[in-house]
Amino acid sequence: MGEILVGTSSWTDRTLLDSGWYPRGARTAEARLAHYASMFPVVEVDSTYYALPSERNAVLWAERTPSHFTFDVKAYSLMTGHPTRVESLPRDLRPAAGGRARVYAKDLPASVVDEVWEMFRSALMPLHSAGKLGYVLLQFPEWFVPSRTSRDEVLRCAERLPDYRVAVEFRRASWMAPEENARRTLEWLLQHRLPYVCVDMPQGFPSSVPPVVAATAPDLAVVRFHGRNARAWKEKGLSAAERFDYLYSQPELLEWAPRVRALASEAKRVHVMFNNCYRDKGVTNAKQMADLLSGAE
Image (cartoon, rainbow, N blue to C red; front, top):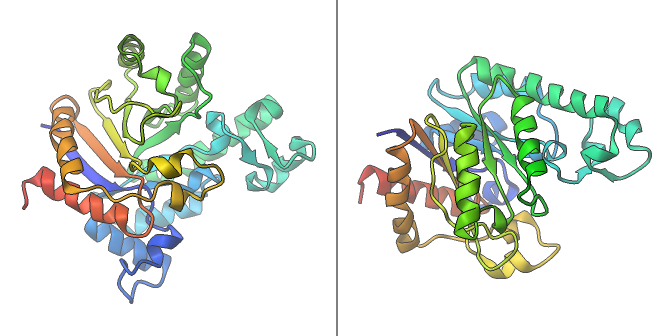
């Protein structure tokens, strides 16, 4: 049976900081990370989607956590086909945007995109060297549809980070529905030994990937819980805190416990990440799931 790590997709969100979950004495970034790491064995770094990580932060994260602690890191938006705020780019790369406020990778010279990938890779090396980097999350956008071109792009992304483990999450239902599409997608991921990110999310939308459970790599399987707030999922202009605002019930978590154990029978390690980490709902559900999987009442 593989090792199961349960955690949340952030430890620094403002709504979590304001919720009262952290002790009063945990007023600094160092103290909050120390408290989080005393409660959970893994966390996902979500801030790297919005801005490139820094090597200094990676060094501090490695130094401030126990030897067994693991960081999963979300890929920068430009790297996975999302629109990216130009002000989030390093200052010396911004002129390449030609005055635009937001860009896609296709809007920039190939040399600039290459430099972004290299800066991301280099910044994470301290975590990797410390044995604390779990995977880099390649989360592709809703308009990233199944095709040979898309599959080739996933492989190119993985090849750009040869030192690191990547995991692949889709946000388009057609990758995994109907069943024939799911079979084709999973066989392709298995062929390339790329971990598939299983998801729990609101259903009924083009972005609604069904809750298919599959391990497509022998070393790693991943489950991410996005909540089931269908009302917020369909509304435009909501904040992440509103979009992922959901507290899973005990019966809903119980649906997933045997699925997670099944993944652990096929992969050496399973990461179970709660992306409803706003306020204290994610940490509450993560603790509940960890208890369920350990057999605790």
